[in-house]
Amino acid sequence: MTLGRSWSYTIALLASVAVVSCAQVDDPCKIKSRVVADDKYCDKYWECENGQAVQYDCPNGLVFAGKHRGVTEGCDYPWRSNYCEYPKVQINPPIGAEHCDWLYGIFGHETSCTRYWTCWNGTATEQLCIGGLLYNENAHSCDWPENVDGCQKHPLCNEDPNGNVPLGKSCNRYWQCQGGYPRLQRCPAMLVFDRRSLRCVVPPTDECEIITTTSPPQEEEENLKPGQHKRPTTEYPNGQPGSQRIRN
Image (cartoon, rainbow, N blue to C red; front, top):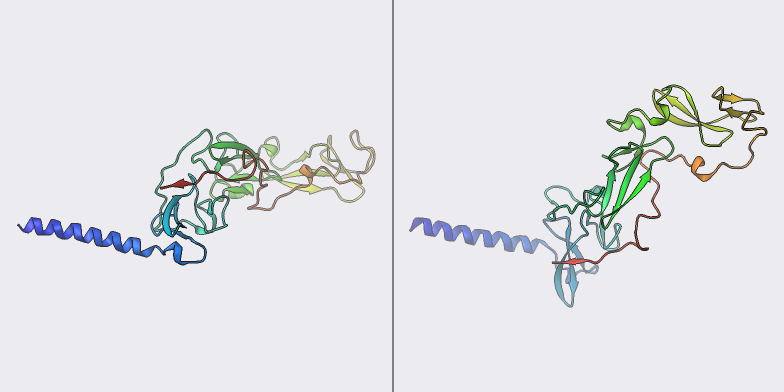
């Protein structure tokens, strides 16, 4: 008899908790945006439709960021702006694809420290860090080599960790390795980089008979700052970003 009363009390308590939890979610039909975050799960949200609150899931790997925010459907990568902090969690399990831990996200390369993958609806696009940077999995972006665990030495500096390396066909720019880390450098005015002596000299050289006055190609000129990475133009397959929303 006592066990029966205890069991009934437990059921009543759980029901009460469920009601309180539901009550914590603002009614999206009573606010201007018509969209609110779920109170427990950061990859779910509620939207007002025909006067009723309807729950939706963010695309796999993304979390709710707010109406008109994020990369698609009001959802964004979990690490941006602390969109998924404790005690909230992602309830939906990852759906893996080739090179992608989730259908949407940015992930490290399996064999290269200078490359990474951007995944959009399970389609992986290979990206390259430039300007002497390496991919930092903790920051989800390209970063200075000394900030990247496990990839301290850059392939450009394999032969000489403190030497100079030519930069493509440029006559006045080159890589300067410092302890295995490359830094983009430019020769002083009126000098050119000599590929044989690996230093700046007075022209002409075998490759540069006159001083270059035109700007080098954009890919040589670009030198990203730490924490930045080039936004891929192919990040969104089939044109504009977007995918069919998942309704619960």
